[in-house]
Image (cartoon, rainbow, N blue to C red; front, top):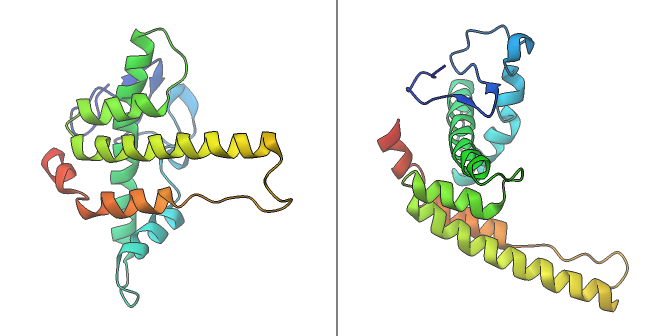
Length: 166
């Protein structure tokens, strides 16, 4: 089965109905539409973060972006999953996603994600060391700012690569 843009969408024994032809019931191996799309409220919230405070986003724009980002995530994750399958591994990790992004031509995103992943792992290691040494006061969990840094740096070149695919 292929989707609207000709990508093989039959992966790892799962069938995806990207064309909306299924009834969303989950029968016959098709994934329900609400299970394959990111929640529209989350998509709208992310869109609003990058826009000026007084900007409005139409429902149609949110739905369009919801389809695009969900398809993009499935596309990248499917590539990473195929790699894991070839290597006889069952767990897709951050390195697999970085590899898939680079393989699919999203080199700028892959480099940014690699840096984020490295910082995240360093921070998790520090946090684990602090917890094992008992250095974190009760109720005082550290919070990462790296996600915000990644979002900011990725948004500078956002969608430039996506335009060439779609």
